[in-house]
Length: 168
Image (tube, rainbow, N blue to C red):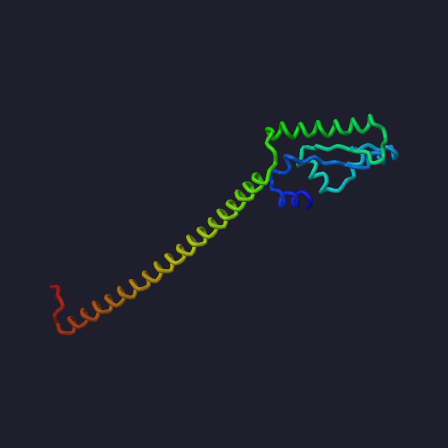
């Protein structure tokens, strides 16, 4: 749900730029828990989000006053930002990129819809052609039956007049 919402809002490429920031790291430390242990029981949507962004995550403490801890956490975040930059060839995520992705998606949707319409049209034409063939065959059979009846009537009339062939 979260991932699909992000993709709807920002386009599918947003996951290439995502870094998940967890706060409250000091609470984990107080409970003698690690982020990995915490994530073992996390909701499925969070795991999908982490997998989608190649598990780029960082944990920040809310209450720490320790400058070394703050510096370490900031360095971890900057390291992840650098990873994102390398992964995206240093191309920033911009509105133009979002609009391009959205346009490409709309084109795919339009193309898919167009293909469905063409397939439905082709099927309708095929059914119409089959119906025309059945009608044509029925008309031909009617004509042949009429000709056969006429021919039979003419033969019977000739036989009745005695114009038939006598074999000796």
